[in-house]
View (cartoon, rainbow, N blue to C red):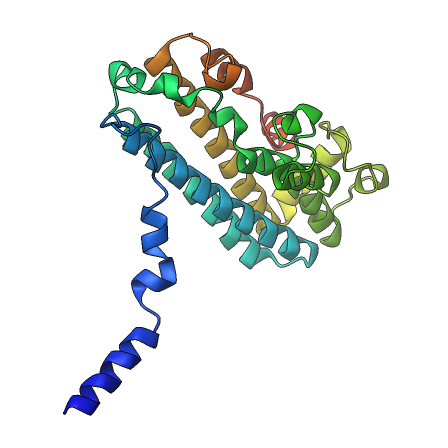
Length: 273
């Protein structure tokens, strides 16, 4: 009986458990307020922003997969990957509701401790913007040139964006995309293009699978704008028009980012149906 008990214990200790697989002990040790006597609401602030970073990681993972599949012309698995991105964006919006349970007075009990820290410095969000097509050298200004995040964002800005992969996908399906667009310098900003829009209209009218994929991209673009809007209103509700932490302009900067679509061609064709 004693020997069997020992074997059972050994088996249990060597088995993968919920806690060991998810590294729960390590995960729960990462919420570290900046003072020995932390304010009650600081834990919520940390948890929300750490969870944002985990979701950003998942979005990058799904978009990388989507680009691989687009180049292969595989519609249905791309729809699944992009649909997951859209659903994650909905979760990000929902988390703003939780953050807004913290009043301005509660936030200001620990805001000064943040010093230069700001959500503006989220490298993963900058990487997401780069994958979606943003090309702006200022996106790496907050990072040391030798840092991993500087390298990741710079690399994302130097390779084809998600939209570039979509154009290749459309070309594979015999929708005419101009050669100068397909062979353009992908490290330069993309501008809406009339001939691309004509190809999109043809895809919408004659290619139901491609049309589904294009609408999924519109979902993502709309979801990103929705998250930006909720973020703007949350910041405005919490600190008004004060300067943000880290020297950012706070709500003013966020307002300036609103209503700038990621995929302008997809919005421009709406008036042509």
